[in-house]
Length: 87
Image (cartoon, one colour):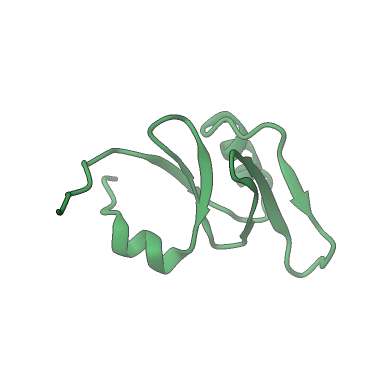
């Protein structure tokens, strides 16, 4: 058997250690609470609670809001293989 993934339009932000990005993650994607770990100050990590547990994202990773409103991270190379940018 085979299947083809249905096309879906998603919203995303690229995680950056900036106030602008933090606001977009909260306001645009609805990430609440926003949890960024500065255990290693040179490499902040965003923590995202999912049904499968806590996911982490590094600076430069894509934070995706799925079709059901779920949030998850995606590495840049996988994102570019999977999605075509609309704007």
